[in-house]
View 1 (cartoon, rainbow, N blue to C red):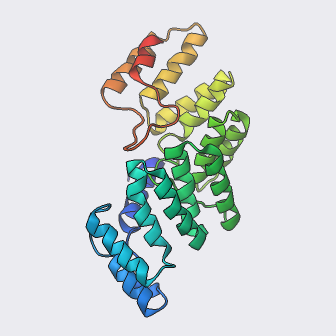
View 2: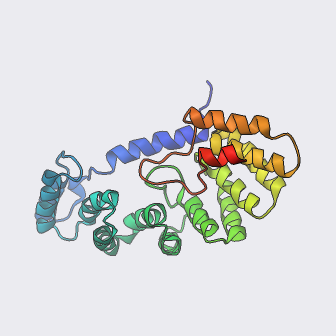
View 3: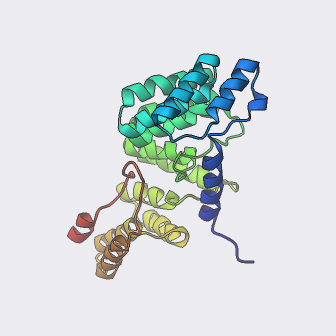
Length: 265
């Protein structure tokens, strides 16, 4: 039987996780009030709606130590850009259960706030809690959280440190390669002028998941080396027009490239 690429397995697992994570096993709750709060929390409702927030408030009045409630209440504020209110709620969730929520808060600091130092602090705090090394994945399923930490260091200009984290994580036999792992490592090498290593990782990325930005960077390497790059440039533009790009429903990916940049190469 033909095997799925690792990144497809990653997304399959994460889709299942995402669909189930809002539901809590109420039998695991301690105390009748908290069990009742859990049942209210599990009621089906549209996230961010008045009904949903009222349900969460009712659950919170019964069990104020139920950390998942604060997370669920925070999400609509995050999506609407009300980061002050989001932070109040998510900080309370982390205070109550850091092991469950530090990774989520750290990722959101990276993805939405571009607070790279704050994200690193959360992810490194999480590492101390998980001695087995497994941290989980970003909320959108694109990156394992060690890779997310590497992205933060890369964004801060600490390319060598970022590369070390990338390579350590990618060398792990149990690491499931994400959609953009090798591309991001390749860009870090490119920014240091290490074009052999950059191209090597762009080629690896092509075997997992090829997309316009990755092809564009290959064309940049070719141009720097005074080689024919126009075919790659046109391929990048074609892929871009076909929608084969880095996508996120709420924000823009780090190292995303736009069509105008490809045209100007």
